[in-house]
Image (cartoon, rainbow, N blue to C red; front, side, top):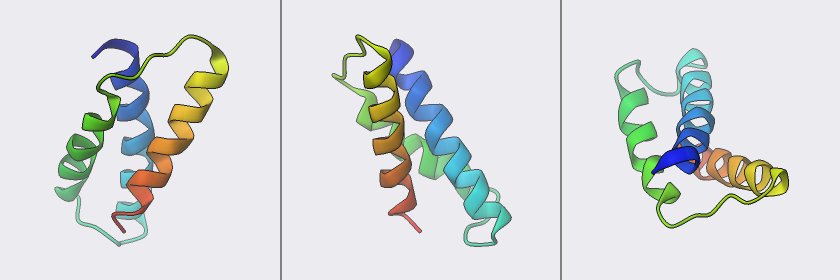
Length: 67
């Protein structure tokens, strides 16, 4: 999935780790939450910096919805 998957992975991982540190989820739950979010990367195109920032924010909001 290329660059888009990297953006989704990074954003989801940061939010999931924060949820773990806040004791909202268990350590082993991080992988499951990040894996579900990676599906949002399919079919997305990144053509400019604004696309990167926008997709990053979208992924962060979707990840927060799990908690």
